[in-house]
Image (cartoon, rainbow, N blue to C red):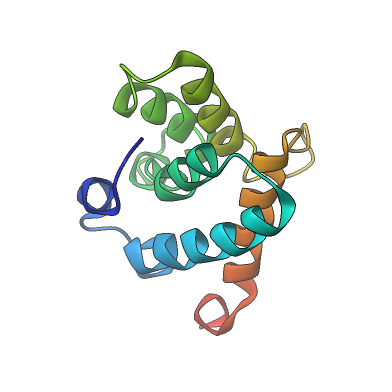
Length: 126
């Protein structure tokens, strides 16, 4: 759905905690977890690559990067299978679960876990 090289372009100038290195670490985590859990890997990889695509908008006072990221992913992935695009957007929209609706799909739960695992790692602590 989207390549690593294409996704990288959306993260130029990102803050150190959520730069493209973070995205790549989350991608590696979702690949390991997703394979073990039987997830839809096309959905999961695209969601991992785009999950923080709207961080800059959030820092500028816009909506949360989860909802804004889901909307941006729909734009970026326009032209692909609509059901897959919506699955990617749903995973991104719920990857920041903070008391609202918990991630429902397997892919959304995996993305949530991988993002939090990276945040708790040495880079996240720094």
